[in-house]
Image (cartoon, rainbow over all chains, first blue to last red; front, top):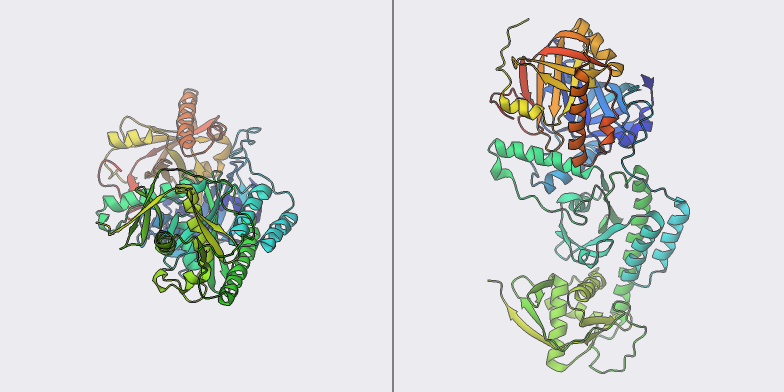
Length: 473
Length: 163
C-alpha cells in the first residue's frame, strides 16, 4: 500500500464511482455497504451522507473506526481510507450543500421529502492508501472520458468579460457570453433561465447546443437541479448523473414496495440534454436578488470539474451584473419615452437592421392563433407557442394590428397596459420580448417582432393571421 | 459456531447473484478495525448455506490476516443497473489458494460484471483489467441475509426468498 494525500483524490468523491464503507459492531461483526455521497471537507476530513438510519450508523456509534473504499473515476485505481467518525451535523453550510445535491435527485425522481438528508456524518481521515496492483500492472491507462483542457483561463475570462461588457442588449449579452464559453472552454451545452412574473418558475431565455427548442423550457422553483439552485441561491454541480438517478430510482422502488406510493409524485424529465452525465447550475445574483440561473451540461461525466465552480461563478456574477445594468437602462429609457404610443406609419426609421431574423419568411397560408383566456396561453395552428406575459403581449399586438393595421409599438405602452400584469419596476420586459421573438422564430417565422429603435419594435407579418379566443375545456 | 438460522439461499437469490453483481468483502481485525476488498467472483455451494468468494491474492493481505483472528465476514452483492443489493453475513470456514479450475470461473464473472458496468457507462476494460489471478478462495457459511438496497428498510433482515 502507498500512502497518498486525500486532497489529491477529490475527484474520487464526485459521485461517478460509488464509495463503500466497512464498519464493525461492538462484537466484531463486519458490515459493508455503499454510500450515496461522500463530501471532501479538507485534507483530514470527509462527510458521509445519511438518509436513513441503518446498521452503519449503529456500528459507528459503537465503534467509530471504519474503512472507506473508493475509486479514481479516471484511472480506476482503488484507495482505502481508515476513518474515525467524529460528529454528525444536521444544519449549517456542510449539511446544506450535501442536502441540496440529494434534493436534486429526490425531486427529479418524485421523492421530495422522502429521500432527504438526515445528517452529514463528519469523519476524521486517519490514513489513505492506494491499493497496490488493484489493476493489472500496465493496464491502468484506461480513461473514462477525454477531459478537454482549458487554454489559459485568465485570458478566456477576460474575453468573455469583454463581450458581456460590450453587449448592446440582453439578447446580445446572453448570446455572446454563451458562444464565448462554447468556443473558448468547450462548454457546448448551456442555457440561461430567468424567473417569470410568478416567481415560481424559471423560463429558458437563451440556450446554446440544444437547437431552438431549448428556449421557453421551464423549471419549477425548488425542483430539480435548476429549481434547487434558484431556491437556495447556491451553485450545484452534479457528476455521475446517471448513477445518482439510478440510486434515486432504487430508493423510489423500495418506497413503493413498502406501500409508500401515496407519498410519491411523478418523476419529472430532466431539462436539457436527455443523456446529460454532468451538470453545473449557478445562480446569477445581484445582492440578494436572483436575476437568473445559468446551466452547463455535458454528456461526459467529468466535464465539470471543481475549478469550473469558481471560474464560472465569476462569470455568472458578471452576467448578472450585466443583465441588471441593461434592465436599469431599460427602466430609465422607458420613463423618458413619450407616453403616447406612436401611431401606425409614424416616421420611425429603423435605427439598425433586425438582429433576430436575418431572413424573411412569407406565405399565403393563414396562420391560426388561439388565445386561451383562463391560462394566458397562445397556440398557433394547434401547437403551443407561448404563455403568461409574453403570451398576453403577443395577443395585444396581434389584436391591435387587426383592429387598425398598427405595426409600430413601444415598450413603454406595454408597461403602461395594466392588463399585461407587468410589475411597476424591474419588469424584465426585454427578456419577455426576447422569449416571444425566439418562440415566434421557431414556431411561426412569418410573424416577426423586429426591434427598430431602443424601446421600440415593429410587427411584420409575412402571412395572413386569424385570431380566436376561448377557454380551455 | 452457532447453528445457521438463515434459510438456504433461494433460486431467485442465486439467480440474482449470478447476473454480474459487484462484490465487496468486509472483515475486521482483533481491534475491530474493519477492512474492505473487492472480490472477483462468488460460487454458491450445493447446500445453499455456504459460498466461496474469490479474492485477488495481491490485494487480499488485510482480509486474510483479519479472518485468521476473527472469522466473521460480510459480503455485499449489488447490481449496478438498479442498486438492488444483498448482504450475506457468516463465518469463514476455510481459506486457501484458489485451485486452477477457479480461474475460468473468475474470468467469466469479470466478463459478466464488465458487461453490466458497460450498460451504466463504464468502460468494459476497467473490469477485465482488475488483478484477479492468482486468487485466494474464502469459504464461509451464509448465516444471515440482509436487504441492502438503498431506501427505507435498507439493512433489514431478509425474510422472503427474493429482494
